[in-house]
Image 1 (cartoon, helix red, strand yellow):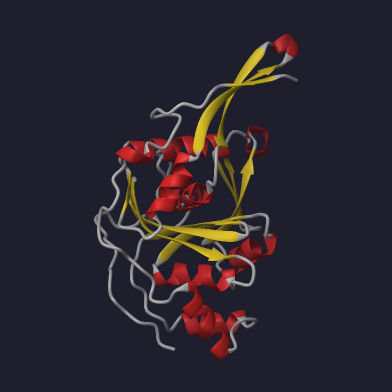
Image 2 (image 1 turned 180 degrees about the horizontal axis):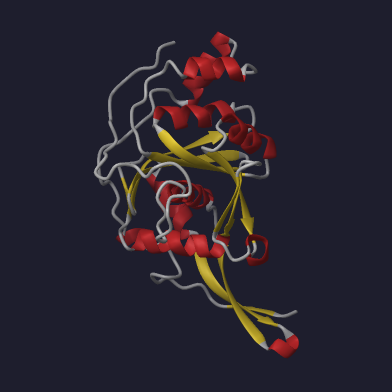
Length: 277
């Protein structure tokens, strides 16, 4: 099999047009506790290995926003993004990176979901399968472990849910195509973010190329795919967050997969609060 890969170039269909995007739109929204501060609470209260106790404690803590979708890409670091969802429009209101190993990642994600009033969350299913499985079990029907799938696996469906397993499989190229289109069309804007520099770099790192595959008697078949030219973790996290938003109110015209779409015009209820310790 021979592959011929096109040269990546920047246009509205092959790249995130980062320099033309709407950055710094709105006030900064931050959770009350940093990852290190939350870890200290877990240690002081003996909640590191007590998930049930952590959930009880979390339920007493304030919520500073609403109508949010949360995504997380997992590796040596975990990359979390939070989108405010309003019909077809989304705003990236928060982004953070946290050490995955030894960083109490399960609790951190649940804390972000609770604090921001998350309606839906999507988490990278690998390489740490235990984190995504635990999260989908604890918040079944609200947090989903995500796998990239083939057309054959998904029977051409862009999004396929397995509610019994708490998983969602998606067609990677088509879903990135939709995310880039929304971003470049101004339907996905960004608030003021501490991680703006990293976000810009990670979005720029993804390029869409066409691969020509020699299928013998069938001739040459062109297939598009998104390739990375550098660190792209926040881009995948944003895709997961946008997918979580699609499970609330789909951008491709489909009905909501579950629950109710957020009320049009709803805005994040931003407040300066401190968590009780």
